[in-house]
Length: 434
Image (cartoon, rainbow, N blue to C red; front, top):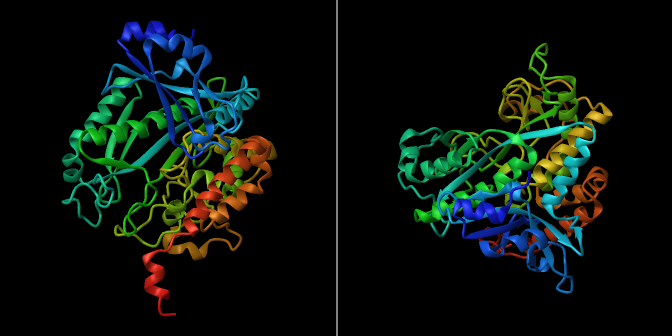
């Protein structure tokens, strides 16, 4: 039964609701509605000018009406008088085809007609930095291999524990927090769930981490590569496909615990990886993570080729155990809704066409990449190359819609053009005397 938001407000002491949607660039947009108005907002939606956010619209377009999904309600643990709601954008009485949450829901519904449900868990890495973003927040965090550093972790105990306590209160099932491979970098893990539930939680998690960091006088960033000499921030996705309560990826007779369905799904993801890359890695900065030189710790922990293996973190896809796989390609800038949508359509294409991913490549891709087969695909070197591949993708046009693909590529191309117009200190240092 759907949640009555007005009733929930009275019972939980909620005074205001954030009615929120995520635009094409993954930015949360919201209006703050008093609880007294939530009944009307729940039916009619909160009005937005789509052109004012990263949606491919003009100032002449009518209002985008964001209708909140009551099932997504999250009461802010650090400000309990506020409730957050994920919303579905409408225009002229119809769902906005390019809106990321609408896209994921459409893809989910199509999969459900075949009896499939994608479940995902995400590992959202982030940095705690100074308010101006110029340096990590902990000057004492200087080890060359800082991963799992207990002292550095505990120096940020107040921030980490408040975020984790919030997730516990929300019932997400967080189970571990750690200092990651870069100085100033952290990761927090919670239980996997339906892809839409996880996407809503990921969108809220990024907001929550930033809000709690600000509360402590710090700044949190999910930027893929904020510091050239340090490991970048990934958003690894653990995936499994379910039908009638059964994990279709699980097979105890396989050496890696995966079924033929799982291998075909992986084959589909690998086959489409290059055209998905502008979605999994959506910023100019993203390609400084996946095509990075060796970092201070000795490894980038990110892929640059389309390969898979067992429990081996140097590949794009890792099989950490039976019944699931980990996509290590995506980064902290990935849109919470577009990421699982793209993953699902690629995987289902692999199942429908019986795509074989080939044998796992159990080598250290950082040290022995030259041993990979000559036909091993490389990931795009920059956002421009990635966008061109997305624009030509028959799969994404068919499954996510040409309106979305055209709008996404158009707006992201503007971002690339803006970046290309910038003059950098490196250019002056290396070409002033050419």
